[in-house]
Amino acid sequence: MVKIGYLGPRGTFTKLAVDTAFNGVETQSFTTIPECIDAVFNDQMDAGVVPLENAIEGTVQLTVDYLVHQARLPIIAEIVVPIQQHLLVSPDFSGDLSKVTNVYSHSHAIAQCHQFLHLHMPDADMGFTTSTGRAAEIVSNSSEDIAAIGNSLAANEYGLRIHTENIHDYPNNHTRFLVLAKDKNIASINHEAETEKTSLLITLPSDYAGALYQVLAAFAWRKMNLSKIESRPMKTGLGNYFFIVDVNQPFDDVLFPGVKAELEALGCNVTILGTYPVYQMDL
Ligand SMILES: O=C(O)C(=O)C[C@]1(C(=O)O)C=C[C@@H](O)C=C1
Image (tube, rainbow, N blue to C red; front, side, top):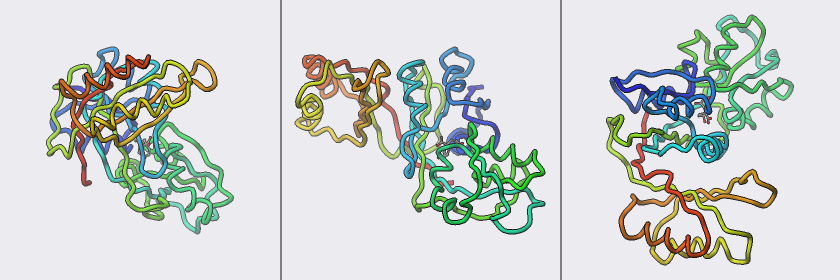
């Protein structure tokens, strides 16, 4: 059976994404994003699922950085999942929110609920955990007046009560998850793909006027539609960046080799991180 690693433990959004996307696979949880990616890199797992970007809080930088700097694995699919953040408490908790001394969650989940926390729990201390599932686990093991931010799966898995539903600050909340695997055909997703994308990693030769403009022009005159461009530090010194560019079309034998050759002629380095289907899930 195909083995899929995910950011765990039980009750994370990543597990929800895995359960929605795959049937008949063996799953294994990993405590951190790097551990999950390493498990695929070292062939312990056939594929790994990790969060990449949230509609409210943006990119999960640990995922991008680890993938680029530590363990280059092909992206074989993207899964987009609706995200509903709830405030979870122990079933014994009574009283109002002002009694809660600490709120635990993944930094991305806390960031999606800043306004709620600011308005309703200004005095509570925040505890950052490796995932929302881990936060729910901490609350389930404690007799203190503490809370977690997480989903309804976590409430079920850890026997918690949903104190307040939908505490994320903006509606239409979604997270993009990446499926990483060495073999593109390792696991099939039982849904219709919405679209196909290609992600490129581009480094510029040096800082000169119009460098990024020239890079973007190579896509523009070929009428290739970009859905995202993100810059991250190269970690080699201030001012050195790489770019991740998502193109809204699958890899082909004409346009992409053309872009690559044009960018390389400018002195850029171009790596294809993956060309993959995008699946939009309803929970
Ligand atoms: O902690 C989880 O439940 C995760 O799956 C991680 C994660 C993230 O890193 O963005 C995934 C989705 C939500 O946006 C919040 C947290």
